[in-house]
Length: 258
Image (cartoon, rainbow, N blue to C red; front, side, top):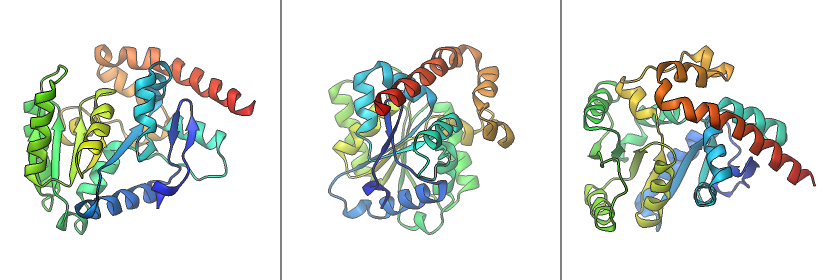
C-alpha cells in the first residue's frame, strides 16, 4: 500500500513516491474500502505553488504533511523529486487526470458515490452536466457551492451533515489553493470519506477553462499557458510562486545534505 510507503521531501512538503498507475490504483483501493473505514482519507496533489505556500505558512505546511497521500502534481516537482530521490520512480500525478481516471472507472463506480464541493453555481452545473455525458456510470449524490468567505462553525457542521446524509464515499474539493487543502484534511478528520483536493479539474471538465495541450504539459511550461489564459488571477501564483519553489527546494536540499 502506498500509504505505508515512506514520504520524501521536496521543499517543505513530503510526497508519496509513485507512478501515475500506482497512484490511481491506490486511490481506487482507498475508495473501495471507504464504506468500512473508521476514518477518512485526505489526498492532495501538490505543485510548485503548493511548495512555495508551505514554505511560508507553517499551518499550511502541517496540513499538507498530514495528508495520507500527497502526489507530485507538477512536472517541475517531478524533476526535483527525481533529482533528490533517484532511488524511486516519480511521475506526474496530475489532479485533473486523476479525477478523469477515477470518474471513468466503471468497476469502481459500481460502489462509489461522488460529492462535489466548490466552484460557482454556473460552473458546478456545467460540471455535473459534462460528467453525466462523459462518465454515465458516475453516481453524483450531492453538490455544494459555498460562498467565497470563511465558513462559520455552524455552516461547516451543516456541510458535514449534508455530505453524511448523501451517503457519499468520495468528496471532490475544488475551492482553490490553499483553501481546498485545509478543507480536505478537515473532512478526512470529520467523516469517513475519501477527500481529494483537485483544483482546476472542475473547470477543465466543465470546459469553462481550456486545458493546456499535452505537449505543453509535458514540457514543464504549463504554467506559462495558464498564465496567458488567466493573467490577473494567476500572476502572483507564478511570478512569486516559481522563485519561492526553487528557493524552498534548494534550501531543504542543503539542510538534508548537512
